[in-house]
Image (cartoon, rainbow, N blue to C red; front, top):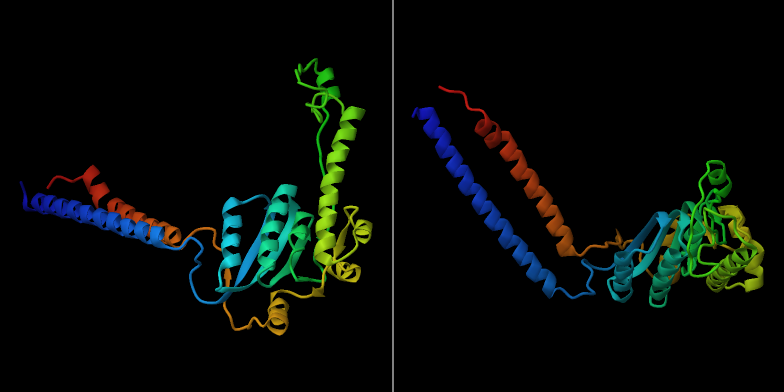
Length: 304
């Protein structure tokens, strides 16, 4: 065997040993993190006193981990206040209700302010209601206090195509609404009762949050949208501004210093985030070394 081949074999043995000890080190590190996570108090949030920012964007749905993080924040003395930064066209009624309830629980213990971005409509407006102060840009699109249910009726199209659907239902309302037959009067009445009940829940949230009579809220609750300036005139928001104005209000009215750092809410624990970062870093290192050194030479070795 040539000297070059011997050196290559030694290099591979050394590399295998190094990889083995790296894996051992990773296992020990993860084990230590697991013990630390187990010993960590479930309600603890890392760091000193700060203002918590909750960014809400896109479609609002129920997020269990986010709700748990907000419940931890409600009892964490390090969180002095919460800024809800909203840029959302809305979402599901249940998702908005769950987030509204979580923010209301926080507002019972500490200051909550809402800051509306480009859009804060429907469920995006709903989740601003627990805040003690609501800010919007003049050009913010907000409001849309209402509930929507949509479906399709393709029964005519199917009839033209010679397709006849077969539906077996336990009752006349089980398949209402249906793609395969028109909505019946009985079905429309039943769905209308559902929509009206959901709408009343939304109106009650706005009435409680804006300290308005429900009758007055209903004059704005026909689904229309408002600009931030129009919403201010109607009493649906408190002031024009953004996060800077929100921090100034917290300092002046709730004695939350503007010098406190602001941190985004984290839905993963400290140990979990650290494990994820370390895993990603180690995998990149191992793969880059294997692909860069060992793999090509193992696949193809020129003969001396």
